[in-house]
Length: 197
Image 1: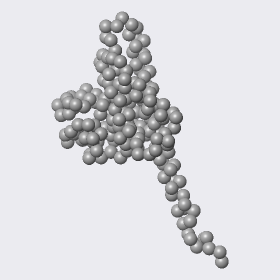
Image 2: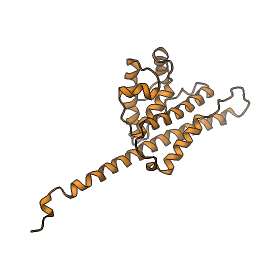
Image 3: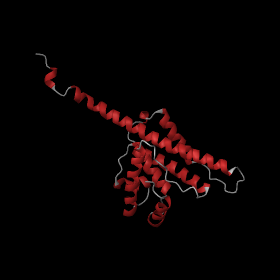
Image 4: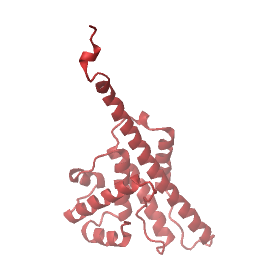
């Protein structure tokens, strides 16, 4: 089930005004993609602000749903951004925040050597860094509004699929390394089999 941006915005405005839904979801998604194990104790450090209990409950629900969506075979994961009826400038700013905090969350949770990251994954993180620096849209610009909208939707789709790819590749790598680590125990499960008679 997709979380409602406006409801999250209202909750954060009244309880944690330093946070926005895009910041919160970007940081959580990046942290989950990195393989980090989320718990309540790390939330203030991860989000760089005090976390009231009601926001901690929201984070727990959001993290659970985000992980489920990232794992879904139907690629149902969606970014938590303002609705399409919001101004393009608001949506671009939110996407920029989302990408910036994705990278911060990823850096906070990633505990393996950087050499373990493929060239593709490093390129995704670099792309997110560039998107985090995106300039605000000039609402008075007489450019092609329809084309601007199409370009924005393409960026959102790229970020969405890139996050899914990051999550799946890193979790597959972690799963395969765990199985390799278990292999020696399976090879020599019965020491008597190794003895010469």
